[in-house]
Image 1 (tube, helix red, strand yellow):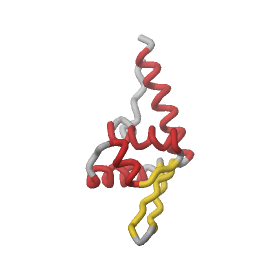
Image 2: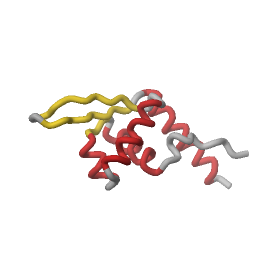
Image 3: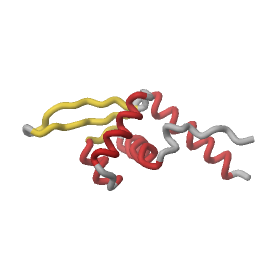
Image 4: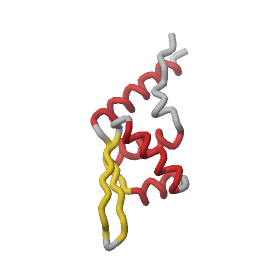
Length: 94
């Protein structure tokens, strides 16, 4: 029997963002853009969806007079990622 994959994490870009945060704990918008090579608009939309799911927290501030968006993984986001990976492993055991 196949368990459902988390639809929030099943998006390639959202999964990439969460994976980055799992390894680095937090990242700013520029780092996410550098790693994912996605457009700013697409990243913004995906960050919004992850924040609405309570998988990340977003803190906006200024750094050297420039806007800085800091993204941090929440405990709920880490748990969702771990469950997503566990379900994928079940799929691979066929």
